[in-house]
Length: 127
Image (cartoon, rainbow, N blue to C red):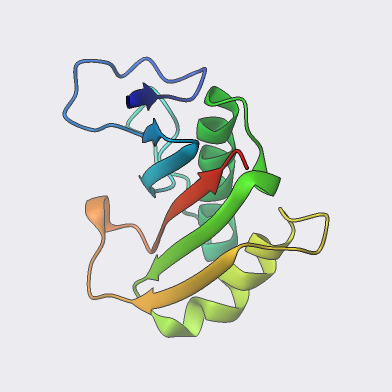
C-alpha cells in the first residue's frame, strides 16, 4: 500500500503535486526546487543559495517520512547549466556527514519549472 508523504511544514494538500510517495519501505521524492514551502518565494540569489534551499526541502520531505539524508539511496540532479556542477556538488556533499552519499547523476537540461536552475529528485529506503 502506498502513502503520500509531505514535509511537516507543507500544507499544500489539494494540489496536483505530491512531494513524495512511500511504498514497500521506499520513499520516492518528487523533484524539489528552491521554493519555500507554502509560499511562492524562490530562494535563488545564487546557485549555492538555490541548492541549499533544494536540499533543505529534500530534508523536510525526508523528515515527513521520519527519515533523514542517511536514508537516501539515489538522487538525480537537474541543472540548467553544467557550469554549475562544481558549486551544486559542494553544497550537496555537505548534507552527507557520514561520507557515504547516495548514488547520483547530474543531468543538464534546457529549462526547469519556474525558471529555477537546479532541481533534485530522490529515492530513500528504510532498509
